[in-house]
Image (cartoon, rainbow, N blue to C red):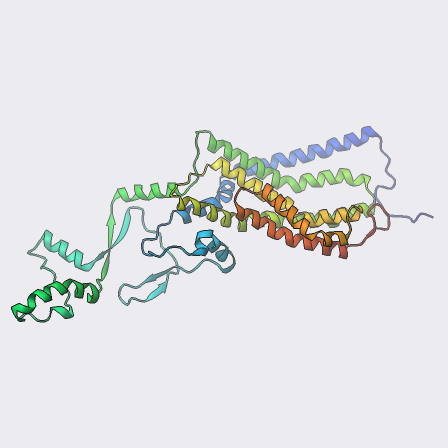
Length: 393
């Protein structure tokens, strides 16, 4: 005896033409939502482009920084780009400076951006006084040389003067008083042009006049599709759900939500963790080979869209394993026994889905290995009943 259900579709019976009519209605609603989302993204396209180009702008800005105070070569972590990974988990290191008067190191809390026409330079006081004396000897007296221990015997005999003169340079180099610096502010319109040129070298470029416009349209269309995707999937689900049983719809509710979460986690992991690490690693090679990179904005947009998509799809591994286990293609024990082979397959797939650099491959492979173990646990925790049986879930 069949048990009564409260299914809304129990009493529905439609012809093929009526199904097509309902499909047409849902498609029209989905297209209307897509158009509205695209228009919204077109109005905010500049902000979307800035968000997508954020990782490459930050990487180029960091790549073009010149440190003239540190003569020590980068260590092993910096050469391989692991310093970016440390910053991801530990945060960026604090910026410090040395007080000119006390000589103590202090933390720069907030960096004030100077006016583009102004440039601050540090000049040794001794050199400044010598230059002023040379320009106007009457107003500025000749600076006194710093005293050294080897220059305190002006009345010494002629026999010792030659030896003293020969050792004066060595004594001055070893025991000379450290020179003090003074900060001067210079202003000229050319400084703003120099700064604009430097800033332009830290940005992505276009190779033809229409590339920026086409990139704007491309980003707006893709963003509109992503923004309207929940509404589109809802309209598709409204049409498909009419032909499913309650237990089948419950499967979609449970695993569809898990799939969405895994996809978002994979895309976010790629955008906020993989991009900075991979870009820093790749740009290090440009610095090693003394090559100036010029990133084309259209190529970067394609890369920035496809790689998170690949990560989001690859993060579906636990659900794929659960699906294969439920249709009896694999068993949980087989997943455990073939773990080494699975890691090899994961490595090959990661190599195919990522760029040519090994770092992006490892950053996809390592999470997938953990997701493989999660898939084994999921096969144990989830019920083993077939989804095609009414008693399932």
